[in-house]
Length: 529
Image (tube, rainbow, N blue to C red; front, top):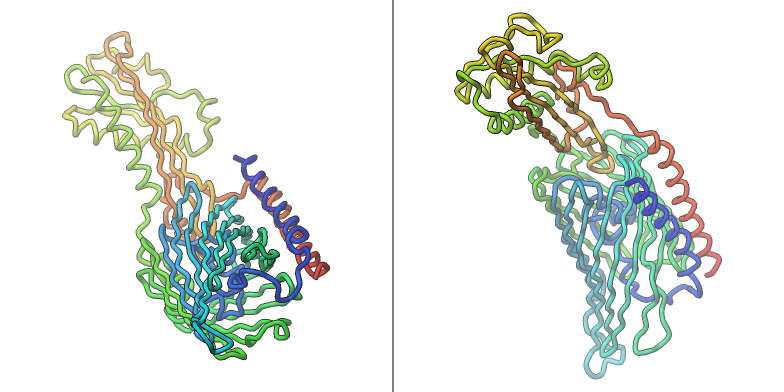
């Protein structure tokens, strides 16, 4: 698993380092093909100064930074966006994302730009032009704080009777520095140029971005530095103010880009996030050719809304089973399966007791496994299940397990003995992360139960039957609810979250390599212009 993660990271780092010199060769201002790829998809990112490399999660990040696909709540999310530009030009994007906790997140989308018929000579029929891109993205969390992603894109452009096709690749990284600070980087539109009718190829508008997002109560501050082919590096800054749990106001600005673009540096917008997964966003920008408007909507299946717009606590009203309740359910399932396999004891009665465990085995499993509460819990479940099966159940008169089961008087009597032993009982948190870039923190919960039963009968304590059963349970719970999931008196419910040592060492190294690759991309592109 670790070697696979390293391979992904090394490949991403190599792409970042090689993207600049390989794709910037011969680039000059105004000569890029598939220029529609420079358009901002999603009203939220556009309203905040086109800062999209950080701050977006789920399916919206497909067009900006595929690492964001690994973040976000719910299982399925759809995005619909429409931009009304100028002079009859409009752009539409539709995408759907599917998130899987074990595999990663996938997203499929399209981006289309349409231009109405035009004719500069005012004679004859007009000429139509259109662009279409089909995207497939994948994002996955490598650790609780780091995610990577990659997007493949097919391109098709048409001008009148001429057409051109091509493909491009995006890759990105997202790193959570703390509960309030997230850094991200991405390289977009890497690939060969496109040409119409065998003419010379126009290179794609490759760009590299590095950004950060800072959350402070009801404010979100986002910043990004971007270098595009044929232009100097410029910066974007965005601010979001959540005036109400369902309403957000946004504004943004681009610095250092006014001389290279016909659009205004300032952008404005708003967003509404509803409780049942529906989000609506709007952005406005002025330009030399007229004002532009963008509307976008998202819908989250199986989750609470307000993610991007409201930032309210989506966990409100969410029912999460306590550690003790989960363990009880697993124990009942395991005991049920064993009781079905166990032969009926003589006389339909049985003495239930805890098996003798050598001290070295108990200490080797840790304090939780040796807690008396574990045995009492299993004993209660056993009594309930056996009674339900029609057996008369007896318990030892003394407290605790006997030291030598073969010497116990009950074994030599006519009452069969059913001994139980807990081999493993553990609650742990293998991984964790943030639901949104500044949203609630979530952890993966893993509960393991492994027990052994032994039925003995006769004066010689003959083992008539023995069996073992193992059960596990895995889910994702809000980090803020962890204290309330514990139960006093049951040591196994006091699990703690811990960062693995290699995570703490490897993550800063990877983040430094990615940042270095992006900086190299900026300067290599600039030097070749």
